[in-house]
Image (cartoon, rainbow, N blue to C red):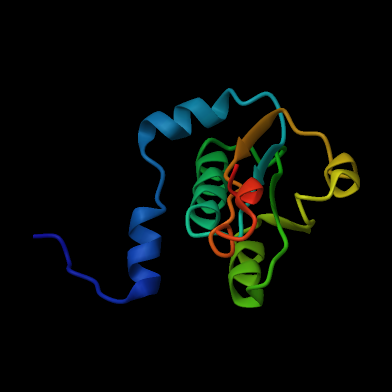
Length: 124
């Protein structure tokens, strides 16, 4: 019988473990991966899983970059501990976007969660 674990860290570890199909896919990724909006609910998990998939595929030559404004220092530190490089950038600023490093794989998870009633253009 599988051991039942509890707590947020255990759950994040279990849910963030890449399956064999993702590991096989990551083995063929052509270069660095950038996750835009990585500080949100979904982004950190995606960045973490990408790093773990690359590690399992033996692809330590590829970086995973997690881009966000990073208002959550703990979340940022957790990703860095896993080997994900965090980049601070406001993705609503065109100059900040232009300054981002190039990447072969881009995952776009940018979204505005609060305050869009008074500024609906930020929701799109």
